[in-house]
Length: 109
Image (cartoon, rainbow, N blue to C red; front, side):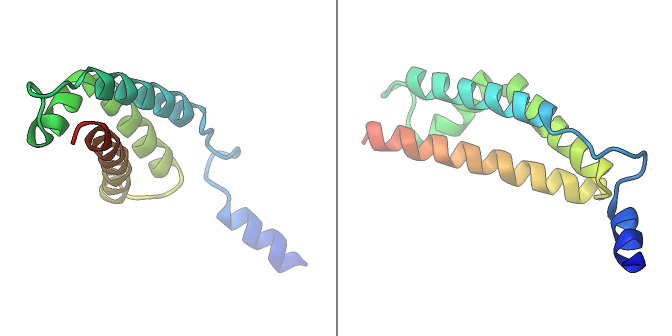
């Protein structure tokens, strides 16, 4: 029993309470909303499959940066290195971008 208490204490982040995910949730919603708007605005022939990612990055740069920063901050508060947190955040943003690109491509063959 004592070892479980010690294990739980050791696993808890420094500073007491667990970091809150509200900032990530808020920024994720804003980024997804921006992606949805950008997908709707990306009209061929001006936007091609090759230009789609650049178009969306230009439209959603602020939201993408805010989400990335929130994810990095959260992971670092939970003990991840900056490099690891940055890689994880970038992979998550890339996944959102890839999903948006696939949705756009399905509607614009």
